[in-house]
Amino acid sequence: MSLSISVAASLPFQVLKAIGIQVLSGSEPIAHTAEKHQASRKFVYQQAHGSLKLIGVLEML
Image (cartoon, rainbow, N blue to C red; front, side, top):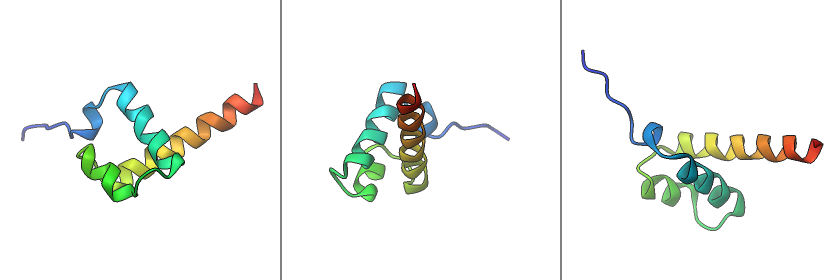
C-alpha cells in the first residue's frame, strides 16, 4: 500500500494562514476557498477554527 499525502496536508504555513483569514473575513464562499486550494470544505473549516482559537489565545496575552 502506498501512502499519499493530500494536497491540503502539504500546503505551506502561509497558505494555511491565508485560508483561515479568507474564511474568517467572509471574502468568498467556503466552497470557493476549498476548490482554489484543492482542499475539502472540512479542511477549510478546520483551518478557520484553528485561526479562531489562535485569536482567542492572543487576546489573553
